[in-house]
Length: 95
Image (cartoon, rainbow, N blue to C red; front, side, top):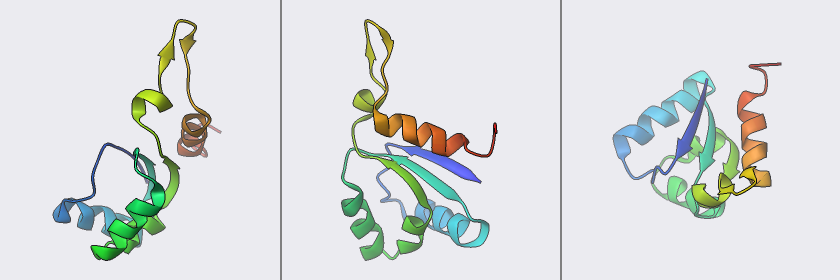
């Protein structure tokens, strides 16, 4: 099980509990795109009692979506982080 999380603040207790349970009981893998540094999210989760969520993080892009998945006149331009999260997310599905 995998989930790509974009723009979620992790400040909703009932959603956090569902995500944490998925990590603990089902091996849920999280792929997060969030402009705040991963250390900040990790601290936030730990202080809120949801450190289990961090254990499920497999990839993290720490820049705004527009920068990670921006466009230019030459077509799609993806940051190195975005390419890594894409490869990690699909690993094992299409191989």
